[in-house]
Length: 224
Ligand code: ATP
Image (cartoon, rainbow, N blue to C red):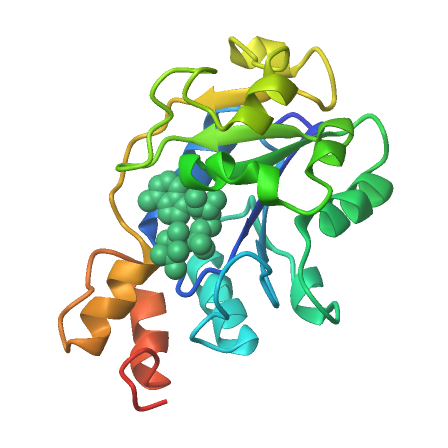
């Protein structure tokens, strides 16, 4: 792997209920291809656009912690867990922009399913003044072609923002959207929770350390 650039920081928010290889593989590939200095995993405390997570904030945070433990560029960022009230990504990104300074390029990572709902996000227009958006394709949620397949609100707002190559991302510290060609893994936390509640194996869908944590704490089985 080439020398990391000090200027690129990845921001990966999610409920991580639980974290799985879909998340980890995207993070690994983007650290490598964009040359991210660090990838910050930010578990949501109280998400606004979806039902409350099944596992507690403490358990979801601990699962991220054990999952990323052996990767020097993966960082657990607990700010949304500690912030009272609804978790808004924009608040975290504003804070990170302040902490990291103006010259750092912030890259907000999301799957195609999340991007298609971006226009529902709190103060989403402001994201473009703070970070780039990096989209990972997701089986069943592909961005067919851009921009015609996008929701109307995104179509207009994002028309001029598409980056055509990784090199484009270096031209500005924020404001672009890039579809990253990552390997597709059809894994979701929903499927993992369903399998566990049906007493089925989830081995090889997530790291063994996370599986051990789930079993030790009787998560998702209905016993917790
Ligand atoms: P759930 O099934 O509970 O909705 P999830 O598997 O989608 O969970 P989240 O923690 O909600 O996981 O996802 C965090 C981010 O990771 C989102 O932007 C989502 O689009 C992305 N993501 C999750 N799994 C994948 C995957 N297999 N491929 C691509 N993106 C993914």
